[in-house]
Image (tube, rainbow over all chains, first blue to last red; front, top):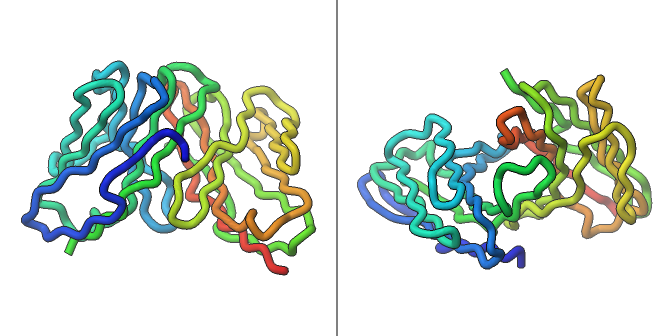
Length: 115
Length: 109
């Protein structure tokens, strides 16, 4: 247990569906992250939130829409996805997001399959 | 562009020592991390290096040479539970983590 939970753990959706991924951290951190992990590829940073404000959007397609209502919760809203979006989506948190040495704590991920 | 290179897969024997290398080219450097990720689980933090030299933590050690853009993770007295992927990541000048694709380590009895 890392103190970061994600739901659902597995999700299968069609290209016309709308779904949301949820992340919650119980560590009192102020920075939260969404990553995409595809097989044999590096982790791809998608979004960063610091104190509920989005500070990074790494050219992510608009079919992915993040929401951060407070420092403990992070959502990723999905709509009209493509099969190539199938991957493991990882949420992470860190104390501030601005200190060089601070580690990130990861959730177990949501395994997404787009049919 | 920014790039982190590490071997795709390595195999070692239980009880032995293995060294996983990582080379990087990034815009700026604010530290290097090693994470362990068991199949189907979250990555977990192993080590952090920001100055040149060796950091030791029990059976695991991590080395950094900033002038060479090089790090390695050394695992001693390998156990079956060490079978996992090992991810190298560098924090760049914008304090974002740039990740390698990971090295899958297979431990054989």
